[in-house]
Image (cartoon, rainbow, N blue to C red; front, side, top):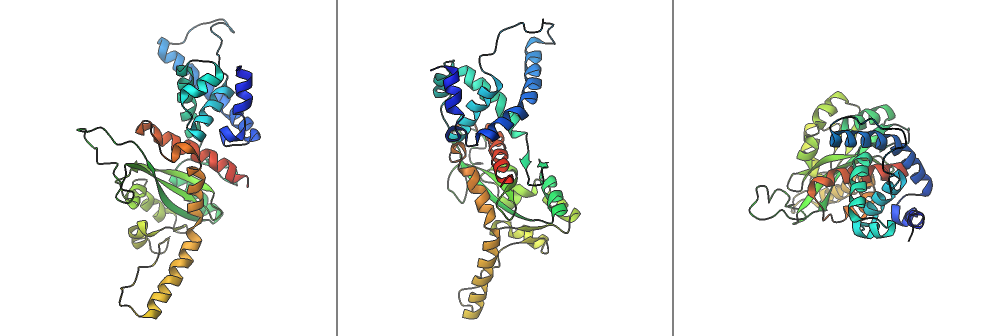
Length: 305
């Protein structure tokens, strides 16, 4: 199989998870950052800038488009690097290097919005919500990862009390249409949802933007207690011996809050559609970039709808 044939096959949305028009825009967007990053890699390897005649030196086997296609195919379907290398007729290490180069560029793109601006931090999300008058939906999701080896410190840090598995937890912010606006607070699965998002400074941000409101689930009840006018959590469950009227009022309020918060689950489903985020078997320290890269790609698609 020639590289031209492999490039045509991998350009299909079945492999990349995005349309061809989206792919063209993505390649054009990453061309300049990739060239700048590549110069930095070469300079660090050589110990300084090398003076070379324009056009001299080895010809790259894979173009920027090929590297982006290989990375997207790996993110979307979790294809082994060796399988992608067979399609391009190159060595496995060539594909591994290409993915290692493109992955951080995708992770640093930020998250698209219908207004055209890209968000990078939780502070950006809250400022954007204040400017647009949005109610932000906040929820956490967990991704199963490999268990650390025995007799190593921190082996229990990834054990999730909810999943009863070794996981890494991420927090997703979305709008009323289920569009991902931000993904961060990526912590080991043992960390509580509320603790994870508080490490991002959400308390200070809520104080700075009193007009912004959040819809959350019961995992953020403590945050709702400290910010009752801004963070709306499900009502407390009444006791078993409570009157029938109290239980009926509780169920009505719970369902009303859940129906307004459900777009957060829709945003999470857009991420879990990518195979690498269903169960990750690679190095745990790489998962942060992968989550942000996939969320950025999902936000691109959602922002145009």
